[in-house]
Image (cartoon, rainbow, N blue to C red; front, side):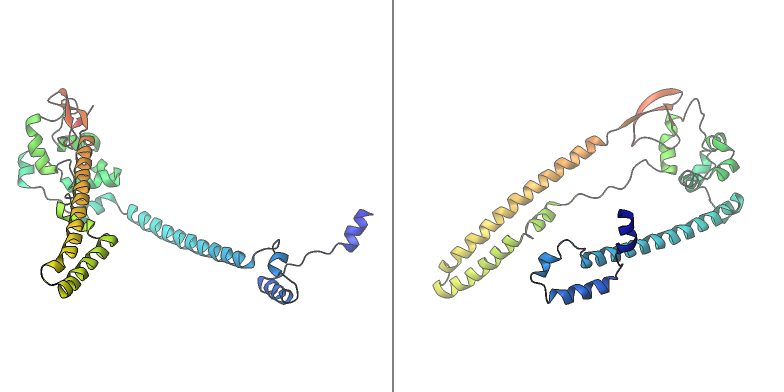
Length: 269
């Protein structure tokens, strides 16, 4: 009996469009009392349309990202398909006289390019790791000579980066003056001075305004001094955190050196 009823009397739901559903609700809403309560258990068409719009935007972004990635992969494959010797010939590295005098036979930029791009083909052209060590005048077991460290750092650069200069005390004063409350008080102080001089004369009319300005100056100085001291403390803490030491081999001995005294040709233990 149940199967008979489902077969002959079950009415399948209609998949109305969002526009048709909206028109139907608008028409029924004119007749039904309190339509917001009547339709509280049905789908929110506005949110559904917004979700569908966001879905399409995400799909479009993914499609664009895939096209960009595909183009980048084609570009990388085209570059990798070029012979290593041909790419190497495109850039001419010329060693300085100081580097040639010390016995170095590889340019710092070329060495950095090999490390940065992990170019094994160019590494093989230079004879592998042993060839690079030979061109840098480094013995695998003995390490570098301690007397050559200044020259190596001068040719191949220091293991440092340019730090951002600290903000001055005047910068903190200027930032403290940007507070909206202080700006309003300064305007009130100027108005008070002008009105006071006009009504009470000089110098009695300036007392209130000058008192406000002195209070503002005190607040600004206290805020700037506090922020400046915190900045200096943070800088000292950051300097302590950067005091890192590593073990390297120099002159055939294991030594403990700072990362700032580390040379790119050092053999790390």
